[in-house]
Image (tube, rainbow, N blue to C red; front, side, top):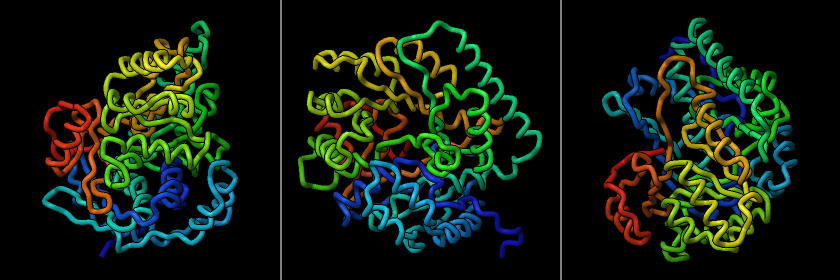
Length: 409
């Protein structure tokens, strides 16, 4: 039996990314009967075995499944224009079912699987990642490590202040905190966000963390993730070749002008743009980059909009793949006179204190009993456990990516 006092990692069901809510609502309305399986993945070798965390993860999941959305939290969600009243009513009744998520170990490796109705298991993802991260880094929560984290944060703020002396460009620099899922701890993410808002408020415009957005009157940021589009590979109402069009069309019908940033890399940028015709180019506000060379991606997107006679300057390009402040500034300088750039920075904001961050994810692997796959422009981010399906997906979309087994991003 554990002897240390229990300290919860998650204290509010709002302590998750906005796009979990936006995808959740779309699935509840469009595919409420879908069944799904999500799996935890560690893509590198951690310095300490994750399997040792399993007993405490079990306790944290017990606590998570006892939480409910509170009236004030539901009122906040109801106040977001794109959140529908019936979805909030659903959330008022919702709680996680403990039997839908299992924790096990294999040697030093940690295995976590969430399996069941998609509208009951899809929201586990961010909470699981936050729990694993915080438990793993609790031994590192020392005065010396925190002092180093504050020093590094001060250096980031200095970069932003130096940038502020540069000549103004056509569009402003907009940075959002995307660091919940790989944060050092809940209190550290809050300290980072408070510090950035105090020291560089003109640049820090939002956060994906709905709880902190509510607390600090920030814009909650997020639209869709890979799992949303991947699910449509398995729904069977359209040909596999048309799954992206079907997913984008349902998104348009669900949000009717809100949340208009489309994710481009589920099967690669070329395949995405083949589906992203004039109809979608006019209906969506912009695109999100999450794999491959961001400079090449942006130039390709600009060329595509121009080929459709759509002014790229009317569109927002959101960059979110492994960014730090110097990389974001380089991308900003390259694009800010031609498109409206925005940047979501995650690990480098909320887990840059010295200890090496974990490279962990929790991804959709099956939907309705069928395999799903992510085949982006970065080979290391390919994931699928069914090589036959992966080969078929490559054939359908003309992709010649190198062979990859279980991986994730």
